Amino acid sequence: MSTIKMIPFSGVRENGKNMYVVEVDNDIFVLDCGLKYPENELLGIDIVIPDFTYLIENADRVAGVFLTHGHADAIGALPYLVSQMNVPVFGTELTIELAKLNVKDNDDSKKFNDFHVIDEHTEIDFGTASVSFFRTTHTIPDSVGISLKTDEGNVVYTGDFKFDPTAIPMYATDYRRLAEIGSEGVLALFSSSSNAENAIQVASERDIAAEVYDTIKYWEGRIIVACVASNLQRVQQILNAAKKAQRKVVLTGQDFERIIRTAMRLGKLEVPEDLFVTLKEMKKYKPEELIILETGRMGEPIKSLQKMANGSHRNLRIEEGDLVYITTTPTTAMETTVAKTEDMVYRAGGTVKNISENLRVSGHANPRDLQMMLNFMEPTYFIPVQGEYRQLAAHADLAHELGIAYKNIFITGRGDVLEYKNKHLSSSGSVPAENVMIDGIGVGDIGNIVLRDRKVLSEDGIFVIVVTIDRKGKKIVSAPQITSRGFVYVKASRDLMKESSDITEEIVVKHLHSDDFEWSKLKQDIRDKLSRYLFEQTKRRPVILPVIMEASQRRGRRK
Image (tube, helix red, strand yellow):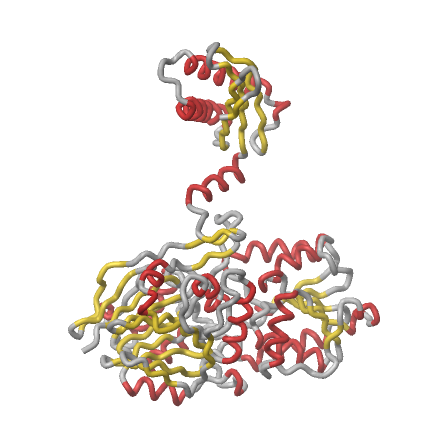
């Protein structure tokens, strides 16, 4: 009888950053290793990745990392994991090629090369469990779900998926394999919840392709298409429509072009002959003969559109008569940004059309699809993943409607441990699973205090006081000099500056005549008293930075 533990390290009560661990006896199986892009309050943070502490501490027990597809929310954190531990990585052909691009781009992981290509027919026996895969429909080819066959039943992770009977063979779901896994007996199911609370029917990819072509065919000017780089299905639809409408395509963005070239090399993207032209060559064509395919940095096209609209883009700018066609559905967090971008485009003389105006577009399963997956699997226990809490709860309700008791449904938090022992699954503690923030080349060196200071600086600014003292003579050599940035306009706030200077002088004199003079106490006292005074006067709390200089005969010392 096996002991099984299931741990969502991330990807629960949040969007993105998917990583789940299944332990079968002494072996650890890692399912996906993704990142997420920061929310607005994470000022200056580039990306957020899972906490690998537990895996690093148990590195000798990790059987492998198993990837479901090639999007950043499934493979983006892989370079940071393999730079700290040597572990085999398994995925389909395209997924592995995209993972290699990510790993090679990171200086700490670029020498890693323990990759293994699998397909839907692969089954790997690790002794404690056998790992197999099943094809799913998503917005990128070679997407799969993962099944771990154990003595106690299958543990299944769907990855991102939806059901679309009209999907072309490269994107088609293997329904027969789903039924086969379900018939073997599923102990627990990890299933994506991203779309669980939206009951609107998702449009088929055939309908989306027709919508894309109609938009491109009937526009008489230049078209700038905003598309997420890794949504290769949408890219294929755009390229097909461009060919039918007899337009040339200009690619922008180095990240995008690498993904396109990789997909083309593997035969995952069919590109009509002589379709692409370079930025230099586009001058040879009339506006109505061109499509500019824009994804922007890290596959995010919205910021690039803003630069085009305000004239700061290095290659392109929106002109009178341009159509900006947004073919991606923005997240809730991005809706305000998209609205502002649309306004900027119109001011620049362009027109905006969103693909979501006429169709519900998503690469994720809606409630009907989620229940269909549950019907295929018929799990004893259900763990909704990949979504905010409300989405997990909505998915739990969908499972309950099909007869799964709430006591067998677990809405987990990051790091919660579910243990199956003596024929029963229950919560049994937790492991470290905090957000690890990446800022430039720094990994995890930005914490809550730094983020709090950044937030204060962005909202209330900084207040710097420089004082020079003679500690032996117990006097102030140079009166306090005050500099403010982002707090108040100094020339218009002379009284405030004068009073702040007086308060500082009073505190410094008091400490100079004290028997237990300490630099840290002096600076903290200045911060505390000035903070209270400035808040009383302005209702703002700037970052207060006291700089104390000690004068001597030869030179001053800064404290």
